[in-house]
Image 1: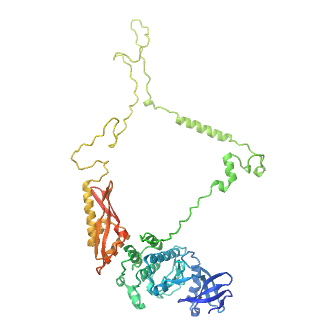
Image 2: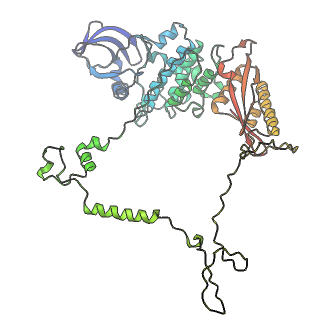
Image 3: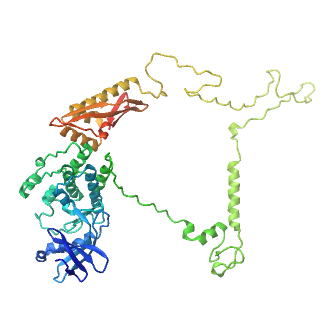
Length: 545
């Protein structure tokens, strides 16, 4: 088909791939100076109405998605034989399927990076307005460009959740080797079916193997029919336990046991402590500040500041007799009488509230002066000193102002000229409320609880761990992985630090030995697992980690 021109525009250069619905060619766009990819429908699709409609509807779904990790669909057209083809972005490179088929080695960093970029593409599709589920996630639909970018392609069997189905009951859509159980048995689907397939791809890159490789379709269907038939996943020593836990969470048989969505998966991958891993996190959207009043109408703002302009009389400029808007006369700056009246009322009200007033009950009474009367002469005697010398004729004593309250002294402060004294030893082990050190009995109980947790990890006693501690889902998944793959685990406790609110410690996994007796290296994250115990009532609370 080389040198053939389709729709008088696209010159076919070479075939680059084949699929179940069409053949992909590299072509030159004669109207636009660019290389494109043409996906030409197979001739037999013309006799299958549903397959033909699915092929022609593909670019409609595809065009809704604009993302750096999704191949762009430009147009759909027909050749001279009325066979439809899709015009797509051409990606120079290879496919992940070809890399895997050639037994290429994928480093841990490369495996995580490819998985991360596929997850970003799925997050875009799943969170779009139509909530598109790809339904055919497989290595052949993952393009690896020459500049190390990952592009997801082929949305031909994608399902928009709010559209009617184009498949009949019992018809399998997708690739059985990467298909989720609910998809194989025609059950309700959501984005977690795509995440299941991504988990198998992730496992294949990490291990070089596939749990369904070389199995027939019937054998795969029997495997998917029951959870007890789920194969056991084995990882090489170089794969950290945190990465293994992510794979296990992606390929859980029960849908609700899997990682909830692609965005959650991105968060797990971003938190991996892998040296050399540089994940390009999405940039936060810029915060757009609302326009200020000046930006909306600078003339109005000026008028408001100067107190000018109303009913078409606002100024367009200042000074030297500039004309006013609306042809009205220029008003002199100043406030109206109504404004002055409001200011006066507020000023009087403020003075009323700010003038200090003393309640009648607290007003000091003026010293009362008694004038003794001589019974003989009945003539007034000059006033005497208000402070009488004899108790009998003493006048009422005016109320004295309250004495200032001396400043309270905390246990760590002393009065001036006072030497700080050590508290007497009363022989009690109970500290004062201000003492930042936790009670010694609580410390001993907390250390015993931490030692019990360490021994439970060595004994791989998950019920005891759940009884004495509260752990996150990720932490429990990590323990499940460790207990399942390593019969021998050695652990120790780091320095135990006492705080006013509890006890903090560090758990260290020292040694991991697999079922073959081989010693595995312990990742840095397993050597520093933070533990905390908060004081609760009469003793330590539950361990949190």
